[in-house]
Amino acid sequence: MKNDFMVAIHQVCHERQLPLDTVLEAVEVALISAYKRNYAGNHSITAQINQRSGAPQVFVEKVVVNAVTDEKNEISLVDAQYIVEHATIGSLVSIESTPKHFGRIAAQTAKQVILQRIREAEREALYKTYADREGEIINGTVHKVDPHQVILTLGNIEAVLPRTEQIPTERYSEGQRLRAYVSSVAKSSRGPQIIVSRTHRIMLRRLLEVEVPEIYNGTVEIKSIAREAGYRSKVAVAALQEGIDPVGSCVGMRGTRIQNIVNELGGEKIDVVQWNVEIGYFIANSLSPAKVTNVMLYDEKGKTAVVVVPDKQLSLAIGKEGQNARLAAKLTGWRIDIKSVYEAVSEALTKIKKNPEIRERVSHRMEIFNMGRAIQEEKDPLAYTEAELKLLSEAIEIVNIAEMSVKREKKAKVMADIKAARSSGSEIDLLAQAESLLTGKSPAKILAEQEEEVDFSDSMLDDLAMGLLLGDDDDDDDDDTTSQPDDATESAEELAKQLLEETISSELELASEPEPASEPEPAKIAEPEKVAPKPEVSTDDDLMTKAEAILTDPNVKPEEEVVDIERERIKKKAKQKKRRLIFDEDLGEMVAQRRRKRKDQNWHEYEE
Image (cartoon, helix red, strand yellow):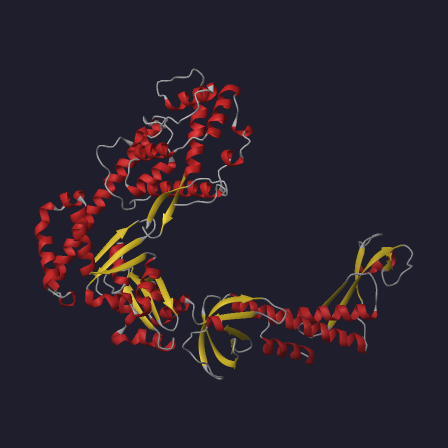
């Protein structure tokens, strides 16, 4: 029969929702603390409680010795063998030493230890419980509303709803029942600290799992979610089993399923769209409820798409303050540019007129473009019929295919030229390559223009002449501005390298003007036939004349390799000093900027 002590322990376990072993362990630790309070010593003490009778027992370990000098820590060999038959000198023997009375101080100490251990066990149990529920939805009651946070009561613990995690359109009141998403659970001195959210996009996923059985069972999968809490959300779903309509499953009969979620989120609009493995169809679906006529994908590495919609649905596709287009971009992960049919057809006709390569490829379908031009001139864009929209959409698609084909051919040509140059061991000027890709000029022509702009000053020729005679190295150059290009030049080179690498690795390169067929091949970049013009120097200086002849006369063939090295070094330094690539915001493209040094200026000061 259990005594009152065990009844009290079971009552504590029931009230605190703690296991019996945890409470008994706390009581045993309290007994050990109370024993040490009254009977000090260095011995090891253990305590046990009989779960049937509730009787406590305290055991003390003592050292077996021949002559006892400290009764608290030692025991004689005879007494030890009476308890443990095989006890020897120096061994430890556990002896029951349960006192009849602990005293008031010891009892108070035991009480404090029990309460502290129970509180710690309760906090640990609560932390484990809610740590396992992190990422789920919980139900709570609003306990307190502050300007910066809302306190929710979750039964025996409280959760915090910060202002940043509150839906802007919602207002909370005390006693209100509320659903929230558990975003994080952390330990603290006062117990677990639970942070909940009402704006997290995963909360919408959990609500859909609760309301839609097909999502919970796994027959319908949520691919992506884009949410602006309190205003609008978009959800892309796909069916993993044939014969199931993913959008209809989420919406429910007459919209009952989705309406429950809308009510839970305070009237937030939710668009459910069908996911498609073809990114073009997926982008078109993501702009729902707007109707899309064309989707043109550009710059696959940067993920940019141009979407064409009817003129009367342009505002619907963009949405209020761009909300629909912004959510569609978040949902698909692509940057979306929206154009009207009238604007897209006008651009297509302009490309045909100005680009002979595109005009040649679409010449067999000119009747479509003539009809499209006539429709543009005769009718209001807002009054286009379905048949007219279909014809204009076909015209836009034809021009887009032709333009992409031209780009692919140019890319293949550039790749072949670069591969040929690398196989021949020629050195490629990254700046010239990048500028050729951006401006449409051939790299050889750009290098020739750069060399024409090089102006060898007297000081540079002096350095070259001394280097040829004395074998001077770059490290011995006294002119810091000559041997080390400034930060602006280094950044320009890095930009050019990055542009070249991105262009080579991407599927589609940036739009550029067609390259004239009469220009030389890019494989001859490293050794242009055209050299720098002959600078004017004094005829009295033999060293200057020698340096000039070496740099300007292509027939001169020096016997030593140092001449070629010095020539390339001087050209490289002159290019670094004289020009750099920058992005012109007005033109929207990379341009070459020249610079020069005045008496009252440094090299880092540029001018157009």
